[in-house]
Amino acid sequence: MRIRSPYRAPATHCKEFAKEPHSVCFRHPAIPYAQGNLLIILDGNDSAPGYLHHETARIACAIIAGNRWDGYLTTSPTADAIDVPPHGLLTGEEYYFIVPHPPETLPDRPASHPGENTAPMSTSSPPHPYHYPVVPTFGEWTFPNGRLPGTWSTIAKRRSPGIASTSDTTRSRDQCCRMTEAVEETDIAHIVPLAEESWFIRNDMIRYGNRHATSRPSINDDANTMLLRADLHRSFDKRRFTFLPKKPGAVVTHVLESESLRDIYHNVELNTIYIAPEYLLARFAWTLLPLLKGFLRRGQRRLLLVQGQAQWTSPTECLEMADPSPKSRSASPTKKNRSPSKRSRAETEDGQDCNGQNSDDETSSDGAIDQSQYRYAKRARRGRSPTPRQPTAAQLPSSHRPPTPPPSYKYTLSPEFVSSTPGDLGLYKEADYNRAGEGDFTRC
Image 1 (cartoon, rainbow, N blue to C red):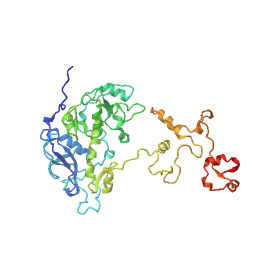
Image 2 (cartoon, rainbow, N blue to C red):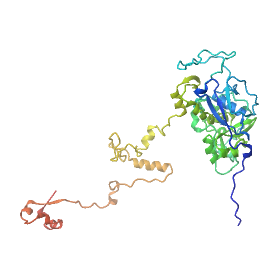
Image 3 (cartoon, one colour):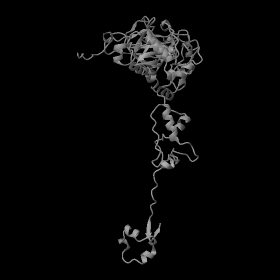
Image 4 (cartoon, rainbow, N blue to C red):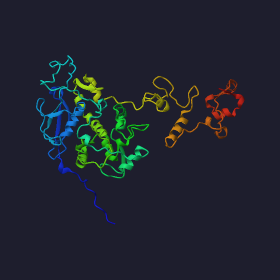
């Protein structure tokens, strides 16, 4: 038997990337620096000196500006567009995303902004950059139906072979992880997450799936799924990387976070995929837009796109968008009633809740069903080992009940016995009382 040497670090593309890539800042041209005009920061991972792919950065800024594909990057708020081809590299550390003035004018800015120009903006020779609204969250982003940016429209659209279910179709079609070709420990990953189903339906994304003509179209479509290795699936759902085209027709992995993932997978082309390009663009927006939290937390009023309309938003509302309150795990009264044994922390030790009501769930005063039996059936349906409570003696048949112990009585000496007995009565023991006979005792 030969013992093999331990594995070293996996093969990477480390030589193609900078050890410490510099960060590239993208700013809003119409917001003063003191009011926090920094939109997002992206790492320059696309070359050894630490440069960033131009078209990727431009599309990212265009999504933030509400799908303004006509926007362009400059080195200052009033400079001309940079002279870099779409698939070239950004070598600077700071850029401004400029959007041409629309024909309509912006709403007047609130009076609480001293020194800001509230006059309508002219489209001819504008004196200052256009103050375009910003999309604050993925939930407020509207998908550009029928208006994919140029590079995204070059992604090949492949249709999956028809199988009974989405899961079976995805596994039969992909057979292995699309990033690594690993066969074992693979998961079915959704490009547009299942948690965003309401956004998916609201933006009519069903039309891009393979099952839109069926009786039950949904987000769980095989055009929205792919096989990924289990650990990569977890990183994918943590927004550490996404998939996008960096050359016509070539979909690659773009890593936004994690140096180890960058060294191995960044700019590596995926194996053949059957994902609709519209879902890939939505995934890019879902991964990107949380990076705006710093912009929303600056304590400034912001012009945001909310429900498709540009409106000024207060600092408090901006903060709520950046850090939404966590939702309760279940607000359904049905689910609350199905779990009566789960008591709140406010219950007291004597079995009553904070309102003074009896919280015992065995039986109710109106003859309700024994909840322990319901929990027994519920565990059995879920496939878990049922562990019902042991029945009380009263619930057992009479033939199986334990023998009833004799009643214990408490006795005291009768007055007649006291009057006829000399000496200290405290010297008498219980055994002496018992020997005295029944006539000398009275039951309490």
